[in-house]
Length: 83
Image (cartoon, rainbow, N blue to C red; front, side):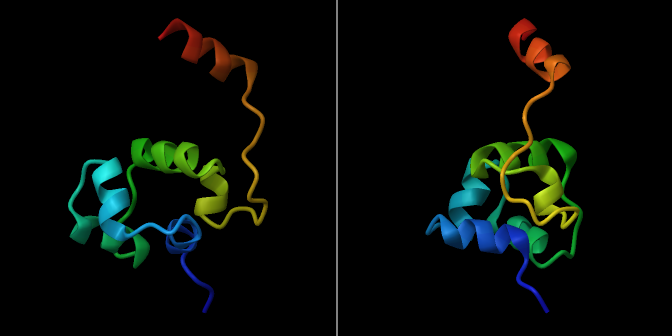
């Protein structure tokens, strides 16, 4: 079985579960459930994690093996600028 992408990304950054849990404002036990794929990750949290690890949500969710993030779309860039 291949390693969970969240665990792989976290370990590649030499971080502990508690470090990422603190970053996304949840308990370490809940974050552990994300890595174990026992509970679904909220979309907002996926955005935070993808941005933090400089990758795509698709990579985290095994929809691609390409680790580099996608180029931001014009629509996305305009939304960020207006906020």
